[in-house]
Image (tube, rainbow, N blue to C red; front, side, top):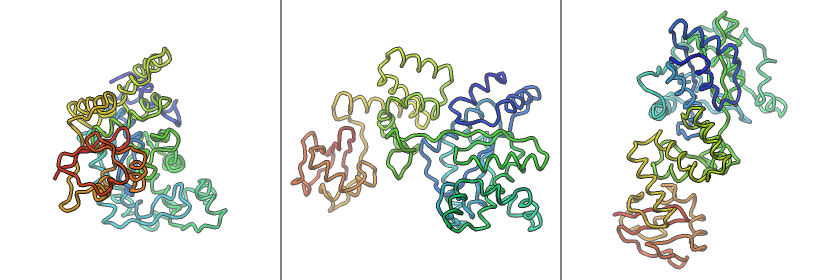
Length: 403
């Protein structure tokens, strides 16, 4: 096991806020002395099961602590999910059904184990302990805080000022998440900066229950490919962890140069020493594109095999550097009787080659769509397609049609 000081360097890499460093160092020293791993907690609300690199920021940090030998507990909020965390919302979130919670939880687990070691990760559902609390125990739990304290949350403040209804049940969400920490005797809890109130409530409740307080680690919100807005599927500026290797590689190469170091810090497991070297190379005049190629290979290799990563790198080199049509490109099966340009647009949208039909029509009018190396025009909208035809959309997207 690494020294407490070296563990601190790795744990603090890329962190937005840590409460607090002195307590964490003390916990790490105690862990080393006793040979007992710390309990690392992450709560997941199973309401939006598709994970992209923005969601993975916290998971990668947990993986680093898992690699340091600590115990990771993923808490699936199947019980709290029926209430819904109102964080950042202008109104209460609709409660999920049991079926929705279970399906989303299953999908979540399939994805998180692309990052975490399944054999070293404990998955718990908070209905195990929350569903068996008596009403008397719930009242005692509620008595540990005040309405004024709960109203410190920005979203509750805004709703209260704007006369947007707040259900009493919503006040219980942070208390229930905090109670998870009591049950698990969590040493560290992680989350995004939008989880500040809930995680700090865990520290408060642990103190009330005379437990050693957990360390609160808040990871920053990752900017998307536009370099401005947070990574979001709805904004189309995301990199999904389930996307094909060549798609991931291409998208990483679109990351703005000024975010290269930030992506190394937040979405890779590179050691702080290596990141310091990358920073020095950039400051010394190294071409950002070369560094970004390293970033792309590093990120893609976290979610795909070495063979697929190398194929993605070769695909990118052929498609975008040498301007050739590569052999190994994504394929789309055309439906019988729907083998014209206009009829394959829905498939292009479904497979994320274009965002909408209007975008495709716009590119067509600008000469940004090619078929087998020849530019298409709006007059070609009803042109028939043949098996093995290759379409190039924009500067970087290739697709081969098959029947």
